[in-house]
Length: 179
Image 1: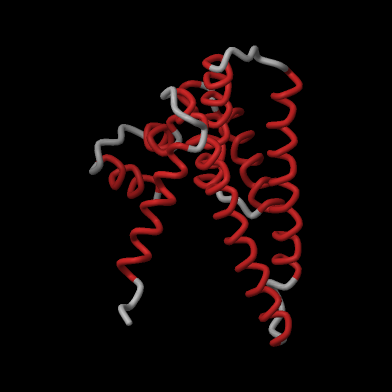
Image 2: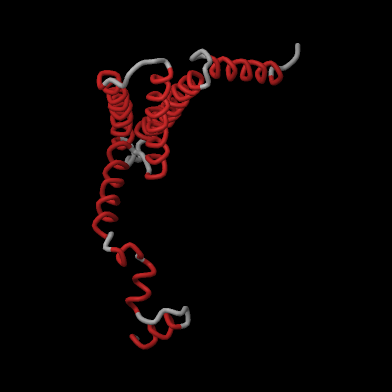
């Protein structure tokens, strides 16, 4: 059996079973397995507690970082210095959003394994609320980023938001059936 496995691997240019394993888990070549395991455990915990998949967590993290960085730059442009007080407001917002997602995800998980119609209906409801909350999170962070970008471009804070609102209203006028 061992010889068959080695011949099979050799057909794919693997010199040994170890060579194959290092190709499968390349982080081990660089002694990064501790970091990989830690990151995997953390992403599993985040997914379990908040229902956030790793890809979504990365997207949310990027949105938060962009909002922080553009906010700092916009503050400098307005002549305001960096203050830990204002930064703590950012942390509070993140904690509130994570609390909302945690609570909704907990209710969603509570009803996920049942076959009773009321539990299925409750799961569907909380799943809907969860997705709506994630969407609201992203819309709110993009709104904040757009406000910061407006300031960075030397415009009023509302300039980009008002442009989007105008475009949205224009689109709705074209979609709305003519009477």
